Length: 139
Image (cartoon, rainbow, N blue to C red; front, side, top):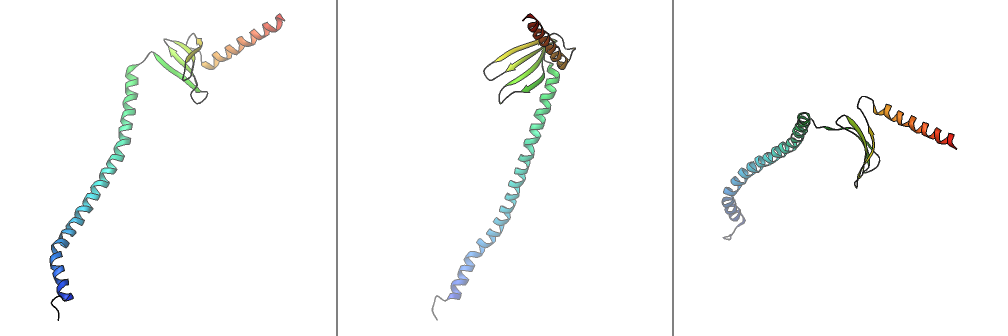
């Protein structure tokens, strides 16, 4: 029999490692609880972002109601990636403007807001037809 038998070495290692094994079990519980803390924090943050966006949208809507600006965008029609036609109302007068990244152009003014945009466009078509008819009669 030798002094360093396998059984004695195993028992010695087991006796020395037993406090660490108990500590490892406690660490597993600590790691498990910290993982749950991270998961719950992540869920809270993910839920908090849409809630903040909803509140911001709601307050902007309330601010727009309280602000009551004299300039109102009645309608906007996209013509391309960055080009638009916009019907804007300022102090009871409607303006048709063209908007591009480089400029804003005034296209036409409409006197009052009592008539609809569609009826105004029909009137413009009639004016153009009358002008074309007069040009045709002149030649």
